[in-house]
Length: 437
Length: 121
Image (tube, rainbow over all chains, first blue to last red):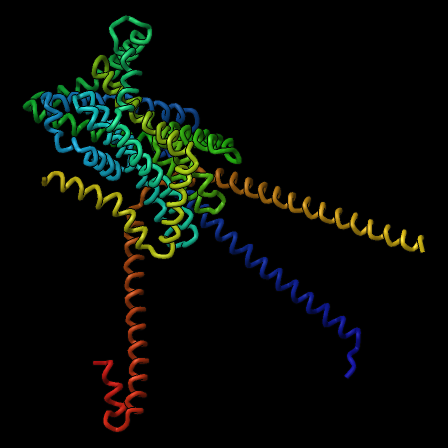
Protein backbone atom coordinates (compact mmCIF):
# COMPACT_ATOMS: atom_id res chain seq x y z
CA UNK A 1 0.00 0.00 0.00
CA UNK A 2 1.44 3.35 -0.98
CA UNK A 3 1.01 6.42 1.17
CA UNK A 4 0.61 9.84 -0.32
CA UNK A 5 3.70 11.81 0.79
CA UNK A 6 1.69 14.98 1.33
CA UNK A 7 -0.71 13.06 3.58
CA UNK A 8 2.22 11.73 5.57
CA UNK A 9 3.57 15.28 5.93
CA UNK A 10 0.18 16.51 7.06
CA UNK A 11 -0.09 13.67 9.56
CA UNK A 12 3.36 14.47 10.90
CA UNK A 13 2.46 18.16 11.12
CA UNK A 14 -0.71 17.36 12.97
CA UNK A 15 1.14 15.04 15.40
CA UNK A 16 3.69 17.76 16.03
CA UNK A 17 0.93 20.31 16.51
CA UNK A 18 -0.92 17.98 18.89
CA UNK A 19 2.27 17.40 20.86
CA UNK A 20 2.88 21.12 21.01
CA UNK A 21 -0.66 21.77 22.17
CA UNK A 22 -0.37 19.03 24.78
CA UNK A 23 2.89 20.56 25.90
CA UNK A 24 1.18 23.94 26.08
CA UNK A 25 -1.68 22.41 28.05
CA UNK A 26 0.81 20.71 30.36
CA UNK A 27 2.65 24.00 30.71
CA UNK A 28 -0.60 25.77 31.47
CA UNK A 29 -1.54 23.15 34.07
CA UNK A 30 1.94 23.36 35.55
CA UNK A 31 1.83 27.15 35.59
CA UNK A 32 -1.57 27.03 37.26
CA UNK A 33 -0.29 24.53 39.83
CA UNK A 34 2.83 26.63 40.44
CA UNK A 35 0.67 29.69 40.86
CA UNK A 36 -1.55 27.83 43.36
CA UNK A 37 1.51 26.68 45.25
CA UNK A 38 2.93 30.21 45.21
CA UNK A 39 -0.35 31.52 46.60
CA UNK A 40 -0.33 28.86 49.30
CA UNK A 41 3.27 29.71 50.17
CA UNK A 42 2.45 33.42 50.22
CA UNK A 43 -0.46 32.75 52.57
CA UNK A 44 1.81 30.66 54.77
CA UNK A 45 4.46 33.40 54.64
CA UNK A 46 1.90 35.95 55.70
CA UNK A 47 0.94 33.76 58.61
CA UNK A 48 4.55 33.11 59.59
CA UNK A 49 5.92 36.61 59.03
CA UNK A 50 8.08 38.04 61.80
CA UNK A 51 5.91 40.62 63.50
CA UNK A 52 6.80 42.87 66.41
CA UNK A 53 4.23 43.24 69.19
CA UNK A 54 4.26 46.98 68.51
CA UNK A 55 3.25 46.39 64.90
CA UNK A 56 0.18 44.62 66.21
CA UNK A 57 -0.82 47.74 68.15
CA UNK A 58 -0.54 49.91 65.04
CA UNK A 59 2.96 51.42 65.20
CA UNK A 60 4.70 51.84 61.82
CA UNK A 61 7.94 53.20 60.35
CA UNK A 62 10.43 55.01 62.54
CA UNK A 63 8.18 54.96 65.59
CA UNK A 64 8.05 51.17 65.30
CA UNK A 65 11.87 50.91 65.07
CA UNK A 66 12.33 53.15 68.11
CA UNK A 67 9.75 51.19 70.10
CA UNK A 68 11.37 47.88 69.11
CA UNK A 69 14.86 48.98 70.16
CA UNK A 70 13.64 50.58 73.39
CA UNK A 71 11.87 47.34 74.25
CA UNK A 72 15.10 45.39 73.76
CA UNK A 73 16.97 47.82 76.04
CA UNK A 74 14.17 47.48 78.59
CA UNK A 75 14.37 43.70 78.21
CA UNK A 76 18.10 43.72 78.98
CA UNK A 77 17.40 45.89 82.02
CA UNK A 78 14.78 43.40 83.24
CA UNK A 79 17.22 40.51 82.58
CA UNK A 80 19.96 42.13 84.67
CA UNK A 81 17.45 43.00 87.40
CA UNK A 82 16.05 39.45 87.44
CA UNK A 83 19.54 37.89 87.65
CA UNK A 84 20.34 40.23 90.53
CA UNK A 85 17.08 39.23 92.27
CA UNK A 86 17.98 35.54 91.88
CA UNK A 87 21.38 36.23 93.44
CA UNK A 88 19.74 37.97 96.41
CA UNK A 89 17.09 35.26 96.73
CA UNK A 90 19.61 32.44 96.55
CA UNK A 91 21.71 34.06 99.26
CA UNK A 92 18.64 34.46 101.51
CA UNK A 93 17.21 30.99 100.83
CA UNK A 94 20.43 29.09 101.39
CA UNK A 95 21.69 31.28 104.23
CA UNK A 96 25.27 30.69 103.15
CA UNK A 97 24.72 26.94 103.11
CA UNK A 98 24.42 26.59 99.33
CA UNK A 99 27.18 23.98 99.20
CA UNK A 100 25.39 21.73 101.70
CA UNK A 101 21.97 22.28 100.13
CA UNK A 102 23.31 21.49 96.68
CA UNK A 103 25.25 18.50 97.93
CA UNK A 104 23.08 16.24 95.75
CA UNK A 105 24.47 18.07 92.72
CA UNK A 106 28.09 17.76 93.78
CA UNK A 107 28.27 14.74 91.50
CA UNK A 108 29.22 16.47 88.23
CA UNK A 109 27.11 14.05 86.20
CA UNK A 110 24.00 15.05 88.16
CA UNK A 111 24.82 18.76 87.83
CA UNK A 112 25.31 18.19 84.10
CA UNK A 113 21.90 16.53 83.86
CA UNK A 114 20.27 19.38 85.82
CA UNK A 115 21.64 21.82 83.23
CA UNK A 116 20.51 19.57 80.39
CA UNK A 117 17.00 18.94 81.73
CA UNK A 118 16.49 22.58 82.75
CA UNK A 119 17.47 23.80 79.30
CA UNK A 120 15.45 21.14 77.50
CA UNK A 121 12.44 22.18 79.60
CA UNK A 122 12.78 25.93 78.97
CA UNK A 123 14.14 25.50 75.42
CA UNK A 124 16.69 28.20 76.20
CA UNK A 125 20.29 27.79 77.28
CA UNK A 126 20.46 31.54 77.93
CA UNK A 127 17.82 31.11 80.64
CA UNK A 128 19.78 28.32 82.33
CA UNK A 129 23.11 30.13 82.12
CA UNK A 130 21.66 33.44 83.37
CA UNK A 131 20.01 31.69 86.34
CA UNK A 132 23.26 29.84 87.07
CA UNK A 133 25.24 33.09 86.96
CA UNK A 134 22.78 34.61 89.44
CA UNK A 135 23.06 31.58 91.71
CA UNK A 136 26.86 31.62 91.60
CA UNK A 137 26.78 35.24 92.73
CA UNK A 138 24.40 34.13 95.50
CA UNK A 139 26.77 31.41 96.72
CA UNK A 140 26.42 28.37 94.46
CA UNK A 141 29.90 26.80 94.32
CA UNK A 142 31.62 26.97 90.94
CA UNK A 143 32.37 23.24 90.91
CA UNK A 144 28.59 22.64 90.79
CA UNK A 145 27.90 25.50 88.38
CA UNK A 146 30.45 24.34 85.78
CA UNK A 147 28.71 21.06 84.83
CA UNK A 148 25.33 22.87 84.89
CA UNK A 149 26.68 25.37 82.34
CA UNK A 150 27.98 22.49 80.20
CA UNK A 151 24.60 20.76 80.51
CA UNK A 152 22.94 23.93 79.21
CA UNK A 153 24.93 23.52 75.99
CA UNK A 154 23.66 19.94 75.71
CA UNK A 155 20.04 20.82 76.46
CA UNK A 156 19.88 23.58 73.89
CA UNK A 157 20.52 21.07 71.11
CA UNK A 158 17.05 19.62 71.73
CA UNK A 159 15.37 22.61 70.07
CA UNK A 160 16.67 22.01 66.57
CA UNK A 161 16.11 18.27 66.97
CA UNK A 162 12.45 19.00 67.71
CA UNK A 163 12.27 21.48 64.81
CA UNK A 164 13.58 18.80 62.45
CA UNK A 165 10.66 16.56 63.46
CA UNK A 166 8.44 18.97 61.53
CA UNK A 167 9.87 17.40 58.36
CA UNK A 168 9.10 13.84 59.37
CA UNK A 169 6.59 13.27 56.55
CA UNK A 170 9.20 14.04 53.88
CA UNK A 171 11.82 11.29 54.13
CA UNK A 172 14.68 13.04 52.31
CA UNK A 173 14.11 16.45 53.88
CA UNK A 174 13.88 14.76 57.30
CA UNK A 175 17.13 12.88 56.66
CA UNK A 176 18.92 16.16 55.87
CA UNK A 177 17.21 18.17 58.62
CA UNK A 178 17.72 15.55 61.32
CA UNK A 179 21.40 15.17 60.37
CA UNK A 180 22.09 18.87 60.74
CA UNK A 181 20.08 18.98 63.98
CA UNK A 182 21.88 16.07 65.60
CA UNK A 183 25.35 17.20 64.49
CA UNK A 184 24.96 19.87 67.20
CA UNK A 185 23.96 17.15 69.70
CA UNK A 186 27.00 15.04 68.86
CA UNK A 187 29.40 17.99 68.87
CA UNK A 188 28.25 19.14 72.31
CA UNK A 189 28.21 15.58 73.70
CA UNK A 190 31.77 15.06 72.49
CA UNK A 191 32.77 18.43 73.97
CA UNK A 192 31.40 17.42 77.38
CA UNK A 193 32.99 13.94 77.19
CA UNK A 194 36.38 15.54 76.62
CA UNK A 195 36.26 18.81 78.55
CA UNK A 196 34.34 17.84 81.71
CA UNK A 197 36.89 15.18 82.78
CA UNK A 198 39.72 17.56 81.82
CA UNK A 199 38.16 20.29 83.96
CA UNK A 200 37.66 17.88 86.87
CA UNK A 201 41.29 16.79 86.66
CA UNK A 202 42.96 20.14 86.05
CA UNK A 203 40.40 22.88 86.76
CA UNK A 204 41.68 24.73 83.69
CA UNK A 205 38.40 26.54 82.99
CA UNK A 206 38.09 27.77 86.59
CA UNK A 207 41.74 28.83 86.70
CA UNK A 208 41.55 30.65 83.37
CA UNK A 209 38.39 32.52 84.38
CA UNK A 210 39.95 33.39 87.74
CA UNK A 211 43.06 34.71 86.00
CA UNK A 212 40.91 37.02 83.87
CA UNK A 213 38.57 38.23 86.60
CA UNK A 214 41.08 38.64 89.48
CA UNK A 215 42.63 41.87 88.10
CA UNK A 216 39.12 43.29 87.60
CA UNK A 217 38.17 42.74 91.24
CA UNK A 218 41.51 43.62 92.83
CA UNK A 219 41.72 46.60 95.18
CA UNK A 220 45.00 47.87 93.70
CA UNK A 221 43.30 50.75 91.91
CA UNK A 222 44.41 49.58 88.47
CA UNK A 223 42.60 51.01 85.45
CA UNK A 224 41.00 47.60 84.80
CA UNK A 225 39.64 47.33 88.34
CA UNK A 226 38.48 50.95 88.29
CA UNK A 227 36.82 50.48 84.90
CA UNK A 228 35.06 47.31 86.06
CA UNK A 229 33.89 49.06 89.22
CA UNK A 230 32.64 52.07 87.24
CA UNK A 231 30.66 49.83 84.86
CA UNK A 232 29.27 47.88 87.84
CA UNK A 233 28.26 51.12 89.59
CA UNK A 234 26.61 52.43 86.45
CA UNK A 235 24.61 49.24 85.92
CA UNK A 236 23.83 49.07 89.64
CA UNK A 237 22.44 52.62 89.50
CA UNK A 238 20.07 51.54 86.72
CA UNK A 239 19.01 48.12 87.99
CA UNK A 240 18.96 48.66 91.76
CA UNK A 241 15.57 50.44 91.90
CA UNK A 242 13.85 47.49 90.16
CA UNK A 243 15.65 44.84 92.20
CA UNK A 244 15.03 46.76 95.45
CA UNK A 245 11.34 47.08 94.61
CA UNK A 246 11.01 43.31 94.12
CA UNK A 247 12.94 42.62 97.36
CA UNK A 248 10.75 45.14 99.19
CA UNK A 249 7.62 43.52 97.75
CA UNK A 250 8.56 40.21 99.33
CA UNK A 251 9.98 41.59 102.57
CA UNK A 252 6.95 40.58 104.65
CA UNK A 253 7.78 36.91 104.12
CA UNK A 254 10.12 34.98 106.45
CA UNK A 255 13.74 34.98 105.21
CA UNK A 256 13.70 31.49 103.71
CA UNK A 257 10.39 32.01 101.91
CA UNK A 258 11.43 35.46 100.78
CA UNK A 259 14.53 33.90 99.24
CA UNK A 260 12.47 31.23 97.50
CA UNK A 261 9.95 33.83 96.28
CA UNK A 262 12.77 35.99 94.89
CA UNK A 263 14.24 32.99 93.05
CA UNK A 264 10.83 32.10 91.57
CA UNK A 265 10.14 35.70 90.51
CA UNK A 266 13.65 36.01 89.07
CA UNK A 267 13.36 32.78 87.09
CA UNK A 268 9.92 33.72 85.76
CA UNK A 269 11.18 37.15 84.71
CA UNK A 270 14.24 35.68 83.01
CA UNK A 271 12.16 33.16 81.08
CA UNK A 272 9.71 35.82 79.94
CA UNK A 273 12.28 38.42 79.08
CA UNK A 274 14.66 36.11 77.21
CA UNK A 275 11.75 34.90 75.11
CA UNK A 276 10.68 38.51 74.49
CA UNK A 277 14.19 39.76 73.65
CA UNK A 278 14.65 36.81 71.28
CA UNK A 279 11.41 37.60 69.44
CA UNK A 280 12.20 41.31 69.15
CA UNK A 281 15.76 40.72 68.01
CA UNK A 282 14.54 38.33 65.32
CA UNK A 283 12.43 41.15 63.91
CA UNK A 284 15.14 43.78 64.28
CA UNK A 285 18.16 41.79 63.17
CA UNK A 286 16.79 39.69 60.33
CA UNK A 287 18.29 42.02 57.70
CA UNK A 288 21.70 42.01 59.37
CA UNK A 289 21.53 38.23 59.75
CA UNK A 290 20.88 37.91 56.01
CA UNK A 291 23.93 40.08 55.30
CA UNK A 292 26.08 37.93 57.59
CA UNK A 293 24.91 34.73 55.89
CA UNK A 294 25.34 36.16 52.38
CA UNK A 295 28.92 37.06 53.28
CA UNK A 296 29.59 33.63 54.76
CA UNK A 297 28.41 31.35 51.95
CA UNK A 298 30.98 29.99 49.60
CA UNK A 299 33.75 30.57 52.14
CA UNK A 300 35.54 28.28 54.57
CA UNK A 301 34.63 26.86 57.99
CA UNK A 302 36.16 29.83 59.87
CA UNK A 303 33.65 32.06 58.16
CA UNK A 304 30.90 29.57 59.07
CA UNK A 305 31.87 29.60 62.76
CA UNK A 306 32.11 33.40 62.80
CA UNK A 307 28.76 33.88 61.11
CA UNK A 308 27.11 31.38 63.48
CA UNK A 309 28.53 33.25 66.48
CA UNK A 310 27.56 36.67 65.10
CA UNK A 311 24.06 35.55 64.23
CA UNK A 312 23.57 34.11 67.74
CA UNK A 313 24.79 37.33 69.36
CA UNK A 314 22.33 39.24 67.16
CA UNK A 315 19.30 37.15 68.11
CA UNK A 316 20.59 36.24 71.61
CA UNK A 317 19.61 32.61 71.15
CA UNK A 318 21.63 29.63 69.99
CA UNK A 319 18.37 27.67 69.68
CA UNK A 320 17.17 30.12 67.01
CA UNK A 321 20.44 29.96 65.09
CA UNK A 322 20.71 26.19 65.14
CA UNK A 323 17.00 25.70 64.45
CA UNK A 324 17.46 27.92 61.40
CA UNK A 325 19.91 25.39 59.95
CA UNK A 326 17.14 22.75 59.82
CA UNK A 327 15.00 24.30 57.03
CA UNK A 328 18.19 25.38 55.24
CA UNK A 329 19.39 21.78 55.22
CA UNK A 330 15.91 20.48 54.46
CA UNK A 331 15.79 22.61 51.30
CA UNK A 332 18.60 20.44 49.93
CA UNK A 333 20.74 23.44 48.94
CA UNK A 334 22.95 23.47 52.03
CA UNK A 335 25.03 20.47 53.03
CA UNK A 336 25.81 19.12 56.49
CA UNK A 337 29.49 20.08 56.16
CA UNK A 338 28.52 23.64 55.31
CA UNK A 339 26.14 24.08 58.24
CA UNK A 340 28.21 22.24 60.85
CA UNK A 341 30.60 25.20 61.53
CA UNK A 342 27.60 27.47 61.79
CA UNK A 343 26.16 25.42 64.68
CA UNK A 344 29.56 25.38 66.40
CA UNK A 345 29.64 29.18 66.15
CA UNK A 346 26.23 29.31 67.84
CA UNK A 347 27.79 27.74 70.96
CA UNK A 348 30.16 30.69 71.20
CA UNK A 349 27.60 33.38 70.44
CA UNK A 350 25.21 32.17 73.12
CA UNK A 351 27.75 32.82 75.89
CA UNK A 352 27.09 36.55 75.44
CA UNK A 353 23.83 36.37 77.45
CA UNK A 354 25.56 35.04 80.57
CA UNK A 355 28.23 37.75 80.20
CA UNK A 356 25.50 40.42 80.10
CA UNK A 357 23.80 38.78 83.10
CA UNK A 358 27.08 38.87 85.06
CA UNK A 359 27.00 42.66 85.03
CA UNK A 360 24.09 42.50 87.48
CA UNK A 361 26.65 42.19 90.27
CA UNK A 362 29.59 44.15 91.62
CA UNK A 363 32.55 43.43 93.92
CA UNK A 364 33.21 39.84 94.99
CA UNK A 365 29.78 38.73 93.78
CA UNK A 366 30.49 40.37 90.43
CA UNK A 367 33.80 38.56 90.16
CA UNK A 368 32.14 35.18 90.78
CA UNK A 369 29.30 35.91 88.35
CA UNK A 370 31.73 37.01 85.67
CA UNK A 371 33.85 33.95 86.36
CA UNK A 372 30.84 31.69 85.76
CA UNK A 373 29.99 33.53 82.53
CA UNK A 374 33.60 33.31 81.34
CA UNK A 375 33.71 29.58 82.14
CA UNK A 376 30.79 29.16 79.74
CA UNK A 377 32.66 31.13 77.07
CA UNK A 378 35.94 29.28 77.64
CA UNK A 379 34.15 25.92 77.52
CA UNK A 380 32.72 26.73 74.09
CA UNK A 381 36.06 28.06 72.85
CA UNK A 382 37.90 24.97 74.17
CA UNK A 383 35.40 22.73 72.39
CA UNK A 384 36.01 24.64 69.17
CA UNK A 385 39.79 24.36 69.49
CA UNK A 386 39.86 20.74 70.67
CA UNK A 387 37.26 19.20 68.40
CA UNK A 388 36.94 21.45 65.42
CA UNK A 389 40.65 21.97 64.85
CA UNK A 390 41.59 18.27 65.10
CA UNK A 391 40.49 16.58 61.83
CA UNK A 392 40.04 13.14 63.43
CA UNK A 393 37.68 14.55 66.04
CA UNK A 394 36.13 17.16 63.77
CA UNK A 395 34.67 14.56 61.44
CA UNK A 396 33.14 12.44 64.23
CA UNK A 397 29.98 14.54 64.88
CA UNK A 398 28.93 14.78 61.19
CA UNK A 399 29.61 11.07 60.66
CA UNK A 400 27.57 10.08 63.71
CA UNK A 401 24.78 12.54 62.82
CA UNK A 402 24.57 11.29 59.24
CA UNK A 403 24.44 7.67 60.37
CA UNK A 404 21.70 8.42 62.90
CA UNK A 405 19.77 10.45 60.31
CA UNK A 406 20.01 7.66 57.73
CA UNK A 407 18.73 5.15 60.26
CA UNK A 408 16.00 7.50 61.50
CA UNK A 409 14.77 8.29 57.99
CA UNK A 410 14.22 4.55 57.43
CA UNK A 411 12.86 3.76 60.89
CA UNK A 412 11.51 6.58 63.04
CA UNK A 413 12.05 4.60 66.22
CA UNK A 414 15.74 5.61 66.12
CA UNK A 415 14.74 9.29 66.12
CA UNK A 416 12.30 8.72 68.99
CA UNK A 417 14.82 6.76 71.07
CA UNK A 418 17.48 9.43 70.51
CA UNK A 419 15.26 12.43 71.24
CA UNK A 420 13.45 11.01 74.26
CA UNK A 421 16.41 8.99 75.53
CA UNK A 422 19.04 11.75 75.53
CA UNK A 423 16.87 14.69 76.53
CA UNK A 424 14.24 13.18 78.80
CA UNK A 425 14.85 9.63 80.05
CA UNK A 426 18.60 9.88 80.73
CA UNK A 427 18.62 13.15 82.70
CA UNK A 428 15.45 12.36 84.65
CA UNK A 429 16.59 8.86 85.61
CA UNK A 430 20.03 10.04 86.70
CA UNK A 431 18.56 12.89 88.77
CA UNK A 432 15.93 10.56 90.29
CA UNK A 433 18.52 7.93 91.19
CA UNK A 434 20.72 10.59 92.77
CA UNK A 435 17.83 12.03 94.81
CA UNK A 436 16.76 8.55 95.97
CA UNK A 437 20.30 7.61 97.01
CA UNK B 1 55.98 6.37 -1.67
CA UNK B 2 57.71 8.92 0.53
CA UNK B 3 55.02 11.49 -0.21
CA UNK B 4 52.35 8.92 0.69
CA UNK B 5 54.04 8.12 4.00
CA UNK B 6 54.42 11.82 4.68
CA UNK B 7 50.72 12.31 4.05
CA UNK B 8 49.91 9.43 6.37
CA UNK B 9 52.15 10.84 9.09
CA UNK B 10 50.58 14.25 8.68
CA UNK B 11 47.14 12.68 8.96
CA UNK B 12 48.18 10.79 12.09
CA UNK B 13 49.62 13.96 13.60
CA UNK B 14 46.44 15.76 12.77
CA UNK B 15 44.41 13.00 14.42
CA UNK B 16 46.55 13.22 17.54
CA UNK B 17 46.24 16.98 17.49
CA UNK B 18 42.46 16.79 17.05
CA UNK B 19 42.29 14.20 19.82
CA UNK B 20 44.21 16.55 22.10
CA UNK B 21 41.98 19.48 21.15
CA UNK B 22 38.96 17.31 21.85
CA UNK B 23 40.35 16.27 25.24
CA UNK B 24 41.08 19.90 26.10
CA UNK B 25 37.58 20.83 25.06
CA UNK B 26 36.11 18.05 27.20
CA UNK B 27 38.15 19.17 30.20
CA UNK B 28 37.08 22.76 29.60
CA UNK B 29 33.42 21.73 29.26
CA UNK B 30 33.68 19.71 32.48
CA UNK B 31 35.22 22.71 34.25
CA UNK B 32 32.53 25.03 32.91
CA UNK B 33 29.83 22.56 33.97
CA UNK B 34 31.35 22.38 37.46
CA UNK B 35 31.55 26.15 37.69
CA UNK B 36 28.00 26.46 36.43
CA UNK B 37 26.83 23.94 39.03
CA UNK B 38 28.64 25.91 41.73
CA UNK B 39 27.09 29.16 40.53
CA UNK B 40 23.63 27.58 40.49
CA UNK B 41 24.19 26.13 43.97
CA UNK B 42 25.32 29.53 45.23
CA UNK B 43 22.30 31.22 43.62
CA UNK B 44 19.93 28.70 45.23
CA UNK B 45 21.64 29.18 48.58
CA UNK B 46 21.24 32.95 48.27
CA UNK B 47 17.57 32.40 47.44
CA UNK B 48 17.23 30.34 50.61
CA UNK B 49 18.88 33.11 52.64
CA UNK B 50 16.32 35.53 51.22
CA UNK B 51 13.70 33.32 52.86
CA UNK B 52 15.35 33.86 56.26
CA UNK B 53 12.44 35.87 57.76
CA UNK B 54 10.07 33.02 56.95
CA UNK B 55 12.49 30.42 58.35
CA UNK B 56 13.10 32.48 61.49
CA UNK B 57 9.36 32.60 62.03
CA UNK B 58 9.27 28.80 61.71
CA UNK B 59 11.97 28.08 64.29
CA UNK B 60 9.52 27.67 67.13
CA UNK B 61 9.26 24.23 68.65
CA UNK B 62 5.93 22.55 67.98
CA UNK B 63 5.39 19.82 70.53
CA UNK B 64 2.75 18.26 68.30
CA UNK B 65 5.62 17.17 66.02
CA UNK B 66 6.74 14.92 68.85
CA UNK B 67 3.29 13.32 68.81
CA UNK B 68 3.56 12.92 65.04
CA UNK B 69 6.90 11.15 65.56
CA UNK B 70 5.38 8.83 68.15
CA UNK B 71 2.43 8.11 65.83
CA UNK B 72 4.87 7.29 63.03
CA UNK B 73 6.81 4.97 65.35
CA UNK B 74 3.58 3.26 66.43
CA UNK B 75 2.45 2.73 62.84
CA UNK B 76 5.92 1.45 61.89
CA UNK B 77 5.87 -1.00 64.77
CA UNK B 78 2.35 -2.24 64.02
CA UNK B 79 3.26 -2.58 60.33
CA UNK B 80 6.33 -4.57 61.38
CA UNK B 81 4.19 -6.84 63.58
CA UNK B 82 1.70 -7.31 60.74
CA UNK B 83 4.52 -8.19 58.34
CA UNK B 84 5.94 -10.65 60.86
CA UNK B 85 2.50 -12.23 61.36
CA UNK B 86 2.02 -12.51 57.59
CA UNK B 87 5.51 -13.99 57.20
CA UNK B 88 4.73 -16.52 59.97
CA UNK B 89 1.43 -17.33 58.31
CA UNK B 90 3.14 -17.85 54.94
CA UNK B 91 5.85 -19.97 56.56
CA UNK B 92 3.17 -21.95 58.37
CA UNK B 93 1.29 -22.53 55.13
CA UNK B 94 4.43 -23.64 53.29
CA UNK B 95 5.34 -25.91 56.23
CA UNK B 96 1.85 -27.29 56.12
CA UNK B 97 2.17 -27.92 52.40
CA UNK B 98 5.51 -29.62 52.89
CA UNK B 99 4.18 -31.72 55.78
CA UNK B 100 1.14 -32.63 53.76
CA UNK B 101 3.31 -33.79 50.91
CA UNK B 102 5.47 -35.73 53.38
CA UNK B 103 2.36 -37.26 54.88
CA UNK B 104 1.15 -38.32 51.46
CA UNK B 105 4.52 -39.78 50.65
CA UNK B 106 4.57 -41.72 53.90
CA UNK B 107 1.40 -43.48 52.90
CA UNK B 108 -1.98 -44.06 54.38
CA UNK B 109 -0.87 -44.33 58.04
CA UNK B 110 -0.98 -40.51 58.29
CA UNK B 111 -3.41 -38.72 56.04
CA UNK B 112 -2.67 -35.37 54.30
CA UNK B 113 -5.34 -33.63 56.37
CA UNK B 114 -3.59 -34.55 59.59
CA UNK B 115 -0.29 -33.32 58.17
CA UNK B 116 -1.88 -30.01 57.17
CA UNK B 117 -3.47 -29.59 60.57
CA UNK B 118 -0.22 -30.08 62.46
CA UNK B 119 1.47 -26.71 61.96
CA UNK B 120 -1.74 -24.87 62.69
CA UNK B 121 -1.92 -26.49 66.10
